[in-house]
Amino acid sequence: MDRVKLQARMDTKYVFSAIDLPAFLEKLLPEYRILEVNGERGVGYRSLYFDTTDRRSFLQHHNGRTFRNKVRFREYVGSGLRFLEVKRKTGRGGTDKVREQVTAVPEFLNEEQLAFIASASGSSDPLEAVLWNTFTRLTLVHHTRHERLTIDRALTFSTADRSCTLEGICVAELKEERADRSSPFMRLMRESGNRSSSMSKYCVGMLLLGMAPKHNTFKPTMLHLARLRPAA
Image 1 (tube, helix red, strand yellow):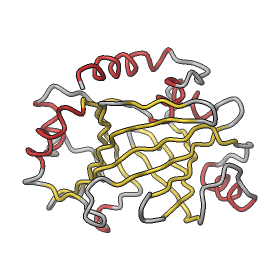
Image 2 (cartoon, rainbow, N blue to C red; image 1 turned 90 degrees about the vertical axis):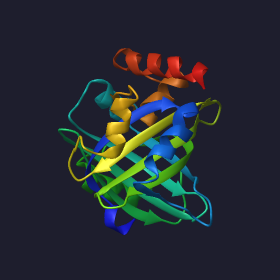
Image 3 (cartoon, rainbow, N blue to C red; image 1 turned 180 degrees about the vertical axis):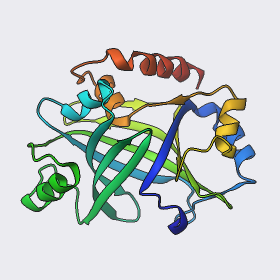
């Protein structure tokens, strides 16, 4: 895992039915190691997303802004590790992430956290907690290639008064130093007819809970999810 931290990287996402996961893993495991924590292969994650009152982060994604930021707290359930993260899109599919460890996941940002976010994002606009997201993650690392693959399942989105679970869906993300179509996972996706997707958990959660200020750009993504869910 230390070899493939890849805080600055190229990301490629795929969304597929959970019913296909066992067959995909069977084909991948000869070339990848799978992370186990305390004997468990699936690790729980919990995230809290922040945005401006006019939902600028959501709108930047909706409008296809090349350079954009996403602010969240992320907790690695079971290990007790928690981080404040600023995830930045850097153009041409590139992503980098700046983070600092915290002791808890608060719903209100303190001055030190706001200063960290302003330094990382270049914006000091006020932010508020918007959306919780939980999921279970499988992490695979290639034996020799400098790449990491994560597969997220059982995605749940919630606020204080509403929630939704995205059953039967897997969201896979291939993380590499640079995009390389010879990746065994990418090859498997092509062979199985799965195309890459730009799905954002934050944006999909906002749409599913009826909180999105706009939705037109995400119609293909939501239709794809609707087609996959009955099949699982």
